[in-house]
Image (cartoon, rainbow, N blue to C red; front, side, top):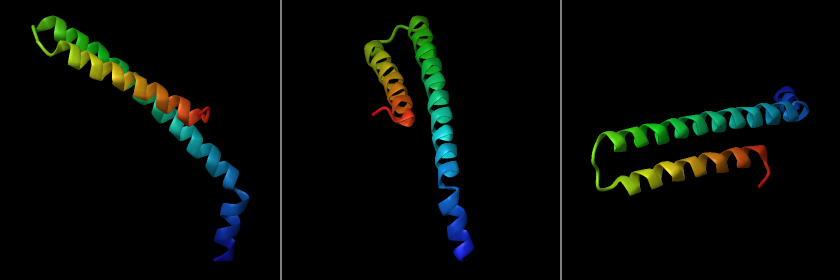
Length: 78
């Protein structure tokens, strides 16, 4: 059992770096996804006449802000 503790204590920085890299990659992928959703919602609103278009645009924009916040958070700036 001690060898398991030694592995995690000596390689803690490796696990931290891998976790940080994983969180950055996932955050960037989420930003790309949010940009695609924003584009698709704009195309959808242009194709149909919808009264709640401002709400849909706001939610899409809010999703972009959340993705940017996650990227900043994953870099550890905040």
